Image (cartoon, rainbow, N blue to C red; front, side, top):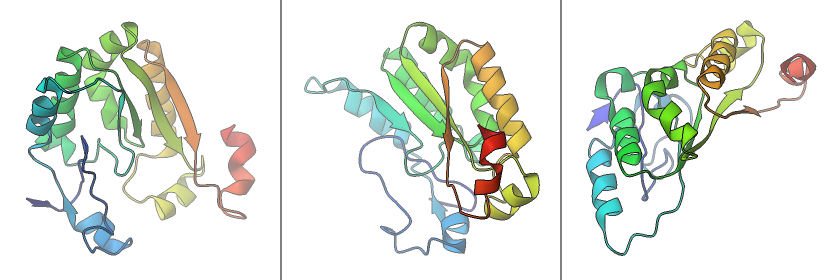
Amino acid sequence: MAVNTAAFIASRGLRTASYLGLSPGLDFESRIYAKINAPELLERELSKCSYVPEPITLGVNMDAWQPVERDMQLTRRVVEILSKRNHPFAAITKSSLIERDIDLLAPMAARGQFMVAVITITTLDSEISRTLEPRAAAPSRRLRTIKTLSEAGIPVGVSIAPVIPFVTEPDMERVL
């Protein structure tokens, strides 16, 4: 199923834009595919007798909390399965939508099963951010997400990337 605004990648068999023959530019944002059966595939994989539990990371290739996730709730269903199975995982995102799932993430973090939510911050300059990441959460919103997750007892890390000389580099001291 093609979706105009988001990508979801939840288990093995990751698909990237280049693998699908899409350009890394506009195609990357406008021709995205949702793996609508990801929760079912994950449930099936975790149910196999041969499955050896290893931590999973959501958001390595694509952000799992993209805007269309508000409607599709694929990531939430994946997190529900991981929670039900007491399966450890980590997440990387730029999206404040991760806050929606605090009800699942906080108890998992308390049990040591949600290891860290890594929030990516490129710059604190909202103009530069809008240019580099036009549909991502604003820097101030990401900082609020870090605070909200942390206050909920969820370990949070920050990825400062990408560092672009003469563009984001001058802002690095403020970011740190």
